[in-house]
Image (tube, rainbow, N blue to C red):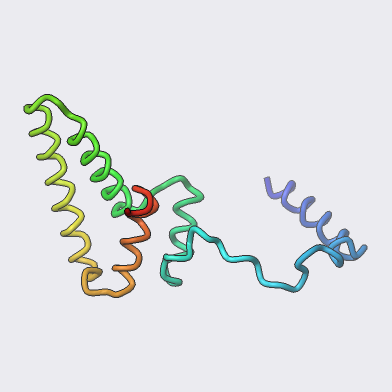
Length: 128
């Protein structure tokens, strides 16, 4: 695999020497910001980007997503026994989420308030 990487690097260096990258649009300009990271604090962006590229959600985002799904299922459920099971499952997830946020000290953080809103909007859509 290192052989392929070295060939690729050699081709890139040859292109640089020939000036093939000199007239590219945006040369010398910073990369455009990623819109989906606008609400994420600067110190968390790299970690979240790595998780996103790996297809992994942070635990708190997965819990929020699960809670929203369970709320939708409860609203649509007609069987009272099943609804009670879903409510119990939702309570467990809410407790875990609240516990996690308290352990991390995020409840008192202004950045968390903005971040939590971004997560909810991303998962549930804009609030009406």
